[in-house]
Image (cartoon, rainbow, N blue to C red; front, side, top):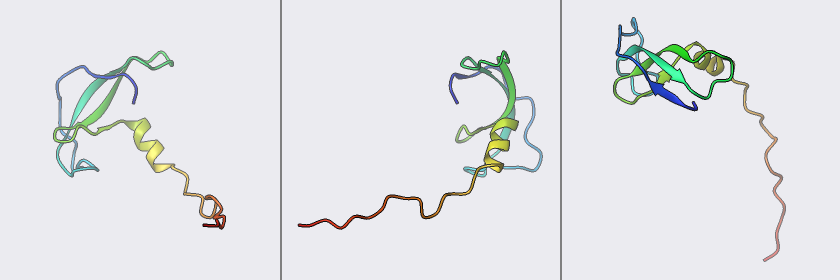
Length: 82
């Protein structure tokens, strides 16, 4: 995420959920996105106290709606002469 800067202290911990990367505790935090062009400078999210993973509603939605990989669309293998 471009231009994310830690802004405030933690207000609370995530209820019953762990960090998806390291399974540690996540805390609620406020962030500033200096590269955002929608006019929204600050956003609320969750930050892992161990690995620094950041989650917010946009990140979670994008991860849930990720398209499946395109199988069989890789490079064609071309025989080469040695």
